[in-house]
Amino acid sequence: MSPATMASSVSRVVGASTVRARRVGVASMAATASVAAVASRRARALGDRCQLQRQRRRNQRRVCAPRASSDDHGTRSKSEDELTVSQASIDAIKARARVADGDLKVGLDDYREKWRVPWSGATVALGLVGWCVSFVGVAAIGFPLALSRAHIDPSVFTPVEQAEYLLAVQVVETVVSLSVVYACVSRHLDVVKDAKNDWFTIDFSEPFESEKGWAKYGLLGYGTTFLVLAATSFAMEAVDNAQRSGAPSAAANQIAEQAPGTIDGVLPLIQSDDPTALVAVLTVTSVLAPLLEEVVFRGFLLASLTKWLPTPGAVLFSSVLFGLAHLAPRDFVELVVLGMVLGFSYARTRNLLTPMMIHSLWNSGVLIVVAAAIKGGFAKELGIPGF
Image 1 (cartoon, rainbow, N blue to C red):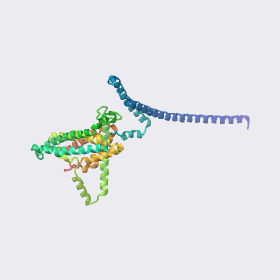
Image 2: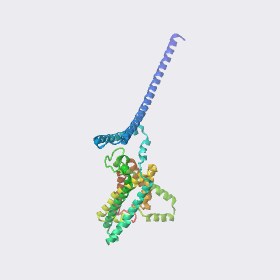
Image 3: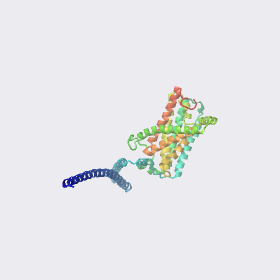
């Protein structure tokens, strides 16, 4: 091989090696940049978590520190303001950590968080029994006895008078039942009144806040109710069609139709031409009933059960009792499903306004649709009982 040829070959080899080296260098730089970006994101998430833990420890030291004397009122107020700001900082850090992680588990933790429950199971049982006794005592004993003493026969009431009577009974039941719950937790008011423990919270502020806005999750829960109840109805119908055949199915349908439902008691009242009756029934079902039932079944029962059960288990158990309490076998499954939507919405926001809103919108929507169907003459097409 001539020197010129050899020099040319060497030149080509060196050139090819240089190109390959450049390519490898570029690929290495890209990989290094990718790794650095991932490491940076993880470092920010870790830094946010560490900052959150440090902030929590500082708050705990502030809360556990001895209170100053009355002469230091100004200093104490300043510390409380700092604690409020610190809590806002914690919420912001949690939000950033959730975005940085992109981890679904972090979001689900909001539904699994438990309440601090200072009372025993006996207190929970006593509260439920007391509520049942007061409910039956007012509606089945107290008011009938009062009418008898006044020589008033409720069987001759007009639909409007029946609706007003129902409203009066519900008002008294609500007052008595809430008093029973208060009596059960009154020995632990220091825990109940501590805002950090989220007991019986009814807070109208920030309705559409991204993390725990009560109106935001109320509307989401209301929309979810339609979906889950439609799916439940479809599943029940599919199971029923798979199990029944011939004449027994007709008998089963007749038995199911004769079983009482939640709407049966107010159907005669909303058929009245006087709008006063409908207004009274709506007040009962869309204002007083959601207030009472959400305080009892979500605010008291569900939260108390988290002492012994995981929060999803407490939601399920309280929902079953919620369905049983309505004494409406025809609607039992739907009531349990509705109770679960209400329970998870409360577990998410820790604000009773959220399940109250869903409960109220659902009850009022059903009543208005039923009343419109009766007036419009298409109640039978909607499958409303008695038409």
